[in-house]
Length: 276
Image (spheres, rainbow, N blue to C red):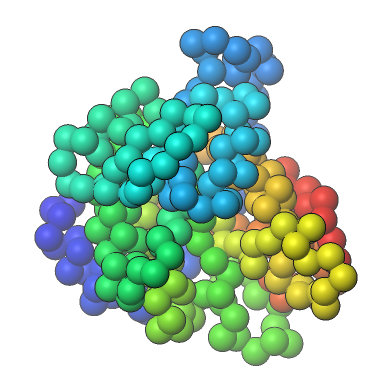
């Protein structure tokens, strides 16, 4: 897969690409708890967009049984290992992924970024990250997308992961769609195992106390639970492209939810604790 041809194809084809569902190809890892205990045996996960509140929450929770490495595009201080990276197509991105077992690509734009910058980060940056990951032997990528890709459907429909995304031209939504497309191409070429989590509106319970309920809310600690499930899930014995690619909807388990979470429950062990 040549880089120039790939980027051209993404620009031409992404807006109409259908979604694929590989939930049946995933099942929980059957490893003893001691295999991810303390010391050098602990797996290392790279979390991108370290500047975002969600990345910080994920780092705190994932650090309970993994070594955490954060990366972002600005200077910042963290209690975790932090490496500043623009995710360029150069050896520094490969170095970022040394001894990394998995990536959680939070893929959030920086405050104030314009449309071009957001799309560039989610396409070129994601491509460079996954290319380096495939070269460095990373096993799993969890890409955090958005359920806003599916909200154009009539509200009376219960939309599943197998439905085709209908992205708007809003930069954040369109860039997430293009990021999914980029991930899918790597999975199709059997370079990486990719799990996409389409998230509802991520929030903290304390910030919305007393406010009118939005069925698309998802508490960030529930997002972390889904991420843990996606990291721990393993592929069934299959070499097919679909078997290396799975999409799950993640939001609160509300009776009014438009996007069911049954697939995430069965394949990832997702158990949302915050319902409204």
